[in-house]
Length: 205
Image: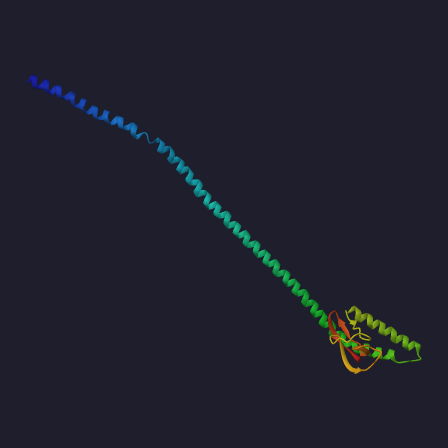
């Protein structure tokens, strides 16, 4: 019995000795796994670079969006300025046209008075005071017509112009050239380039 006990006693210490090499074999493999710090070092760099890219794209998009808004507002402003300028020019032209039309109508109503004064001046009279009064009235009327923008159309001795004159008679006169106005029956008026009333004339040759 003592020998068996000794043998069993001898086997019990061998069990831990057999387990120890197993742990010793696993220890050399650990340094090989620890060689990955290089990978671990590169991983943080990738993680740190990613936020820069992710943070940069939205900012650039916001900048581009703001630029587009500014460009749109600038285009809208320029279009509005152009429309207002066209409106201002059109309104000014309409005002001028309306003023010219109204003045022309008023002048036509006054011109018969001018015609009567002109006929009165052509009549001979011994009353100098009367004649002087008619001349003063005529001068005042011409001044008023001039302030309204009306001016007489030159006719006597001028070459006949169908755009300014209205021929009521043709006569032969060797002393005058061809299509020369010999006599004016009624004075014509114009306002700028617009004819208010054509001059009624007698054309020679």
